[in-house]
Amino acid sequence: PRRWHNVGVTTTLALANQKGGVAKTTSVASLGAALLEERQRVLLVDLDPQGSLTFSLGIDPEELEVTVAEVLLGKVPARDALVTTEEGLDLLPANVALAEAEENLVTRTGREQRLRVALAKIADDYDWIILDCPPALGVLTIGALSAADQVLIPLQAETLSHRGVGQLLDTIHDVRQFINPDLVIRGVLATMYDGRTAHARNVLAAITETYDLEVLEPPIPKTIRFAEAPAIGRSILSTARTHKGADAYRAVARLLVKGR
Ligand code: ADP
Ligand code: MG
Image 1: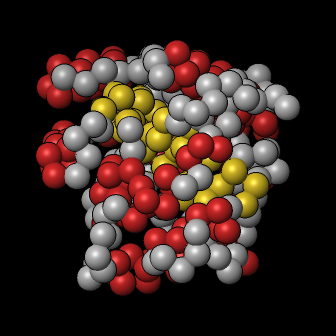
Image 2: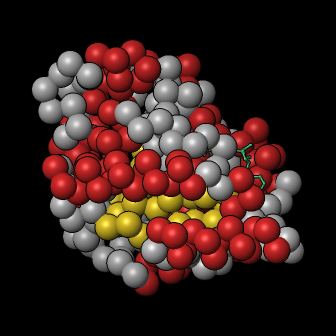
């Protein structure tokens, strides 16, 4: 019994950015592991048909018969699709079946509410539910934003596309207006950050000003260790226990817990 804090309060956090390669999946896995270290009860949800989160946590997506796809289609309750990773994280996994499910959902009733409804039935078992969005602003990401209490926007400072952030914020505002009025933008998580370059620092400052968004501290440093973790099937927190990247995620996780 190492994690029974805050029983009865669940925070659902979506990591969203329609740009691929900005460390959404890496951040979901790492924050999940860091929150577990903080004795939080954590559920991760893979919403990418690529199944990268599932794979990176040591589970072969193609071997799964029941995934989040069947949950969204209403075929099974979320509880029946859960798996537990080697690190002890609960995961609602995904594989390529989610691509077909997504197409199917477009014409189905309540498509944007289905994740929220499914998660509501298991939410009491968790302090944190973290949603790994796919690199698109389609029905899966909108479903995640509809189910979330908070959204965190991972951004790679070096290659910031301001237009992309604007589109994401427009989508968030639409979701707030029509589906989920209580959705809070928790802020920007600066990823793959090289603080030695003035450019990275300037880009971060520009984000805060242009979009009036909080940038969470600390930024996540760019380091080669992140590339190695998925192949081992564990997050960076357990492959590199003392590591500046892992420690940055630990600090962000503590900030999230404090701000609940
Ligand atoms: P997304 O889910 O947004 O597409 P990923 O989490 O899959 O992004 O990350 C994209 C790539 O960047 C992966 O190869 C990952 O290992 C790498 N990466 C993530 N974070 C870092 C980091 N802090 N430093 C270096 N490489 C990173
Ligand atoms: Mg991803």
